[in-house]
Length: 226
Image 1 (cartoon, rainbow, N blue to C red):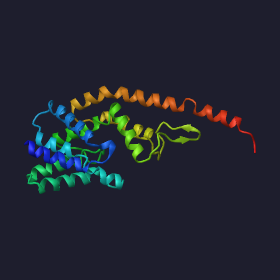
Image 2: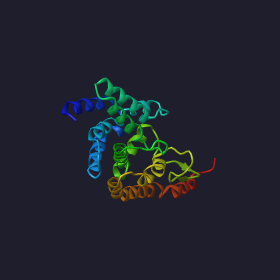
Image 3: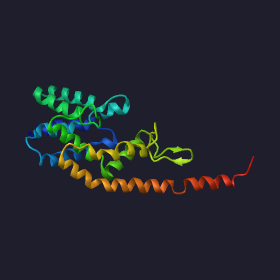
Image 4: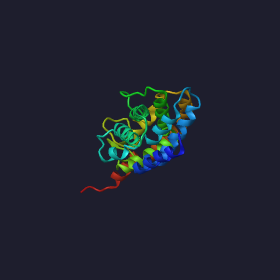
């Protein structure tokens, strides 16, 4: 890839990013992680990998405005149109499109090529560990979701049906990403980050729940009858 082509793609990416949890620094972390994983794989098309990494989240703004929209689908189409309009080969544009389309955490669209698998793993590593915790808190705050839900006077751990909270996101997604990796290097890096995320979640749950039930009991015992 030439420097001019890289700058062209990078500048387009920057124009598309407006979500604090999926900002350009997230993109660079994914790109650099993808390059690290690629060192341990054979026959990687680095031009495709770099381009797909840079453009993988350019559909986030559309999803943020309308949650029914899949950012991977919108982003893959935007990336394809951008590449074709700027003179890139159609096979190249289609390869990048397929990588972006399958990078999302969904079982019905698994990545097929080595470049798509590397992008998937690199993106998921940025959801693992403490970085993933921090980004999830940013995102949940952005969509005005609470830290936790209270059910029957107790703070839910996030495993309740229909909950929308940081704890729910941790139990549904963050806790379960570690068996979803396609590359050995991706699994190794994610495994190193897992324990810190578990400690954070358990300690945070312990802090917010420690005096919740007893506090409620003390409060109501102090309230006089009408």
